[in-house]
Length: 155
Image 1 (cartoon, rainbow, N blue to C red):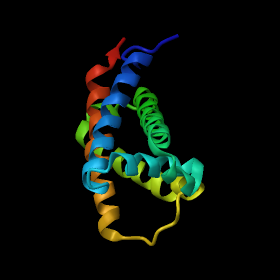
Image 2 (tube, rainbow, N blue to C red):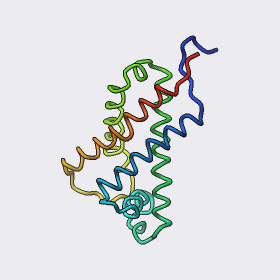
Image 3 (cartoon, rainbow, N blue to C red):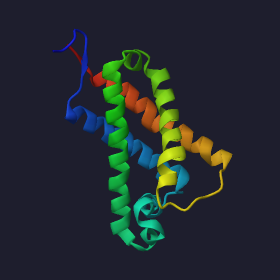
Image 4 (cartoon, rainbow, N blue to C red):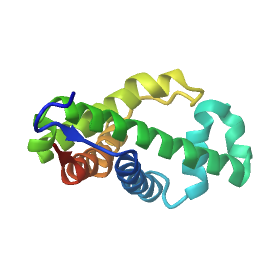
């Protein structure tokens, strides 16, 4: 039984939002982090499961990295969409929830997911960490928050 004013999403809506946010994030990574090196950025992502062998895999490992990138974007979009059905503050305060979600995504990726992968550990760099956080706020958090609020249907 559905409650009145309950937010609903379709799989298609979540997928579209994930594609938009994932594309924005991927472009930002290629432009700002990878210095326009598409192959290197997405091979780095595929190195999470393949290790350093990913960098010798050419377009195949870059495409694997691209698929992983969109899968991660979809997961974060789905989590936000589900969470927004449970608490109205997420879709009522779009900017604040987008900024906070971007920071949460950065924290989860940096402190939990990346350390569990085969990505080579690098020393912590404050400038790079801030750039990564800003990218995730503007390319993941805010778009997911805004588009989720915009595309939700209320019963």
